Length: 151
Image 1 (cartoon, rainbow, N blue to C red):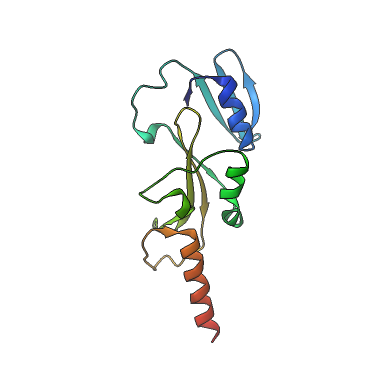
Image 2 (cartoon, one colour; image 1 turned 135 degrees about the horizontal axis):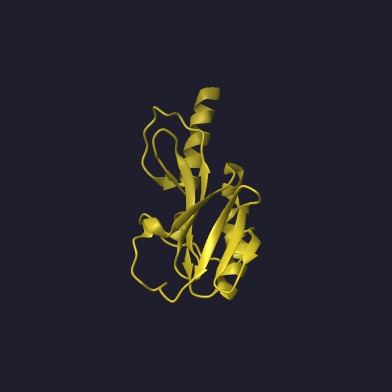
């Protein structure tokens, strides 16, 4: 991903739990999962060039159990959640009904405006249909469905 200043971007990604694997004067690689996957950052003066978000968007998988605390985790690192799909930061994480599995996501930007997402795949009924909603609302619906089955 293009970045304007490695000395700003490397610490940002380290706050997300990544570990620096390699760096030279204009390039850095950080482990996403050590030994498996990494993120490449290229320092460039072309960061401000208009772009489509699909070419500067990365989603990092997290455990569904982290969804209750992920917003506070980002806040502790001074990373601001941004509006996504017309859902405000207060409504995130949000649950998207992607077939055949739903997922929950929370969206934010790096210091250069690259689009980042923390994503968790959810156990859902693949035949059920629902609209995008906040994770809090989805959790409440699941709780209500569970209590109906135990009565």
